[in-house]
Length: 135
Image (cartoon, rainbow, N blue to C red; front, side, top):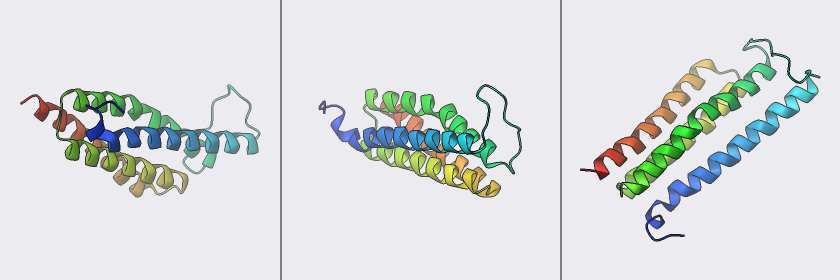
């Protein structure tokens, strides 16, 4: 690992773990889609009572925040931000995403919303750490 990245090794780990969680979400959505005999290319009925809809939305929602995670990680690392702050924020994001995924699958609406906010707090922490690195 490059020397300047070494202090952020936990954040790099979170990037890999997040990719793995996305992979799991993709597999779950595909299996659910196959079991439902869903015709590829056709829209899914937007109903939270449907596991097919929830599994599809779980991965779509994760994809919506993936670019932000990558950009904020790079910003913080290249800004020489406080590694402890960045690494902790990355794990907060990851924990929020895992909880969000599980709550989405189980149709726990309040839990899903809380988990989403937790992941946003993690992202915001990474951004603030990056800004502080410029100070």
